[in-house]
Length: 454
Ligand SMILES: Nc1nc2c(ncn2[C@@H]2O[C@H](COP(=O)(O)OP(=O)(O)O)[C@@H](O)[C@H]2O)c(=O)[nH]1
Ligand SMILES: [Mg+2]
Image (tube, rainbow, N blue to C red):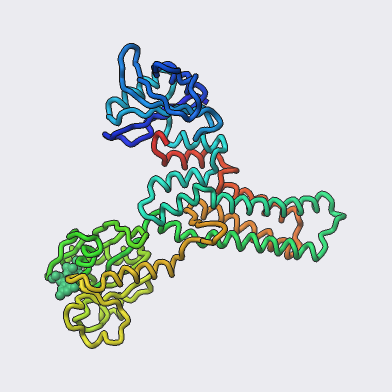
């Protein structure tokens, strides 16, 4: 392992910038560039900041605070030196160049975290959680990331692994010592244990949709006929005039996307063209795009003008607007004007984008709908909040498949070798989640999404 260095703070001006050095030569590199009236970095206590200066030969580059973290008690598990300098673009770059000339090489993206993983300072779910934490844009996302960083998911996975391993040991013992017959009662006990593992896997899998919504945001499509007030609703929820609002039907022709945080949910709001029969090719293309957005939505805010009669949008196509959709909330806009009597029986939410009346109720309805449909992640007093990501989901699906096959095999009395093989497969799949059965490819893929210095 060579010694790596990088700027750990984002590019640009700030009060302070931090550079990081990690590896066997980290402290020696620091000795070459750091001057202080007191002690050299190699003589400093671990985790105590020391004031001094960075010198490039005789030239004073900056006054800095330097901290030494001796292995194994550091983020990467190697010797680490952190230098906090003034947050200028040029001064930071000069110090980095000096570090690189003094024995360090430039870190790859995510290399610090990768080393932490390789030195068993964290498992793969925790490494991913660091990325989630940095990119979190809602309280929910932050919470999921911190819990995962705490190891909540890893603990569950390891419990599952040890249970699978126990079962595998049992079956392998039987293969090696067949005279110790698996009697019907141990057989059914094994089946029960397999069933329990399957249930744990399934319950973890059920947190995947919540995980996706948390990480990517909820695709919320504002849809309905022209002039209902869709663009007005987008502007209302955003809190500023983003979309053009006009009394001319067919004003919004392209789709328009903005993100907001609503009750801890990150929503990706999409305003679309009004749905109606049209001969205008540009408007038709807009309607086409609107239909595509509807099909890909997690949530549809279906906006209607409450002052107009209730009727399907595409009357002659048997109400194409009522196609089976994801989650949908019906909204009657323009509640500041007398409502048409045909809506009397409707339980739709009444709002006025003009006055703001009903908008708070709508926000509550959105929160309730999302919580009802996608849950609150997997939550329990003892084991914290879990919301898995797409990679975990893929591993778990394979785990379920093979555990299922093992269970069927055991039930039908198929050769124990087969059952053992399936269990080994399941164990491998589950191990991939925490990074125990990883190939270089997988690691490369995950850590390359990090920024340099992380
Ligand atoms: N009275 C009233 N008019 C509204 C309300 N919301 C929107 N409008 C008007 O309805 C027309 C169409 O609004 P717009 O947001 O462009 O509708 P869109 O075509 O669905 O995007 C505009 O003239 C708005 O000023 C409302 O709550 N009350
Ligand atoms: Mg519009």
